[in-house]
Image (cartoon, rainbow, N blue to C red):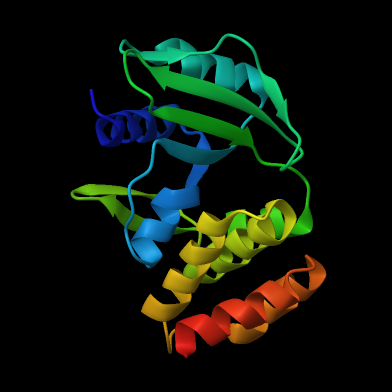
Length: 186
């Protein structure tokens, strides 16, 4: 099983169990921006921990869930990790936290074709930009900044700039937004 097949299988399991989710990270920026390779898939889920345990119990080899829930310090979220046997590919499931931006982007999610023939819930292009700039500003992660620039460039003329500017201001990412916009639109 390859990474994309594992993503499709996890989406199917989430939907079968009725667990609300969205795929974030590079998969979301690939849909709204310029595709790049990745060794992971990030999911935000809204479910009680016992539902997550039920989900993880349904996964079949080669998918293996780490038995322990972890606390993610960057996102201040609980997370679970699903690995593929004999593969560096991992899927991380983050429990939706109470931050107003995280709630907003989850509520605004849209159903899009994430992989050929596979629909899934994703953040909007605006929310991908804000989140990538948020991570870039906090963690100094060049790939997140590049992803934000790519989404701005590809989605030019379709973006809700007041929404993006509002959240970037609240998340201390205004300088990163100005720089990304100058690069993408320049």
